[in-house]
Structure formats: structure tokens, C-alpha cells
Image (cartoon, rainbow, N blue to C red; front, side, top):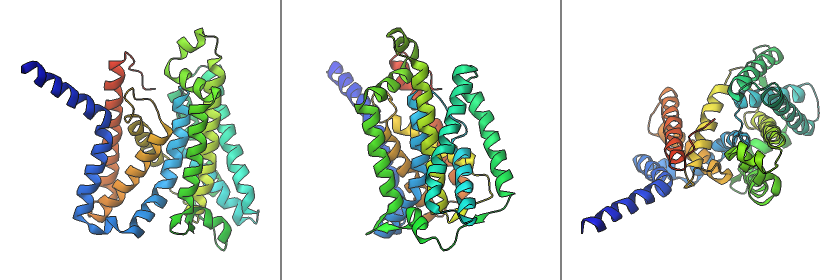
Length: 327
């Protein structure tokens, strides 16, 4: 009898470890939503998808570099730089379509610089990308001169961030397309699978003859390209660029989404789909808290707690398989 009871408890514990994140998300949103019925209105749910899309795209860019075994403190700062560049170029009369390849190129080059510092100069990724974060912030301030850049009378460009296809936000459709491409790449191509292997155990992967430096570099470049494009979409979403430095807020939320998304896996494997679900959960949570009268300052603290808890879950699960390194 005692043995059966302990087995049952153990089974319940394993179930909660595997499914606890998803169950917790549903319970939290239901509890907050029942206190404010407006949360479940279709129009509000569509707004949540739109509001969460930029965060989710940043988290996807960060996930790409984390999968390859790297880390990027400057993810939010890069988004802010390309957002300002896009807004500035459009205001100066450049065709808005040009901003997409510009954002892509700036992001890719930033990823290449990060990879060079980490791989060739052998600076720890946290320190190297912290340095590039400050450089990117300085470049942004120099470019916008501390002033907001407002885009007007650009219906096509604004459609990317604010438009809808039926009732579905266009920016969310972009998220779905990028998610599908990334999921296929990382799960169904040799290059993507080798990037996963490099991130999970670089030494063992190198012993098999895989050029781990190449795949780490690729992860930084892919991440940078996604983040650079995201900055352009952010300019469309916000009708320009703010002079306020929001890079660190972007980073904290994106890290929360990436690590929280990894807790869906039994072995805490970073997941593109998990990141998207978590990114949208964080957006929905913020929306529900605001509807319930919680201030933005308190929401920042709550998101910090989510980040700590998601990393804690990550550490606990990785200890079970003999791996405790996060970044």
C-alpha cells in the first residue's frame, strides 16, 4: 500500500514537472481573466496577439543564439537601434521597403561582430555582448539625438505592425511565418540539428568532428538577422521610434520567454514553439494585470520573478541529467 502511494506521488511529481508550466499558465490567466471579463473579449485577445508579437520576435532571436550555445545581452539594444534606423530612413524620404534589408544587414553584422569577439578573441559571451550592448545604445542615442522619430503617412509600412488580415494582426502572421521557418530549420535540417548539438555539449560535438565554432557563429548571425528585422517591425508597430532606452526591458522579457519556453521540455531543451507560447503568455499576463489595475512598475517586478523561476526550473531539470550550465 505504501509502495503504491509513493509510486503515485512520484508519478504526479513527474507529471507536474512535464506539464506544470502549461497548467500554471492556464490557471494564472483564468484567475486574472475571471476577475476582469474584458480580458476574454475577442478584440482584447487580438490586441494581446499584436502586443506580444514584437516581444516574441525578440525572444525568437535570442532563442536562436541560445540554441547554439551563445548568449546576447545586446538583443534589446539591437532592436532599438534598427527601429531608430528604419524610422530615420523613412522620415528622410527613403522607400520603406529598403528598411527591411537594412535592418537585416545591420543585425547580421552585429551578430558577426559578437561571434568574432566570443570565438576568435575568446571573450566570455556575457561580457562581449554587454560591451556591444553599450555600443549599440550609444549609436542609437547619437543617431536620434535623444529625440523621438515619428513616421506619418506610410500606410503600407504601418500595415506590417498595425494592420490586420480579417481580425488577425498582420504582425502576428509574421510571427507565425518566422516561427515555422525557424522550427523547420532547427528540427529538420542538418545545420539546425548541429547547432542544437553544439549548444547542448560543445566538447562532445567537437569530438565527433563537427566544427562547433562555425555553428556558434551561425547562431549569432541568425539571431542578429532576426533581431535586426524585428527592429523594423517595431518601428512599424509604434509608428516610429522612441528616444527612451527600452533595450533592457526587451531583454528581460525575451529571456523570460526563452527560458520559460524551455521548461515545456522534459530535458529543458530550448524550443522555438515553446518560446512563442511563453512570449504570448507574458503579453497576455501583462495585459490581464493592467486590466486588473496593476501598475507597470509592479509588472516589471513580476516579469523578473518569472525569469528567476524559469531559470530555477531550468537548473533543477538540468541537474537531473548532469548538466547545470545555463550560459
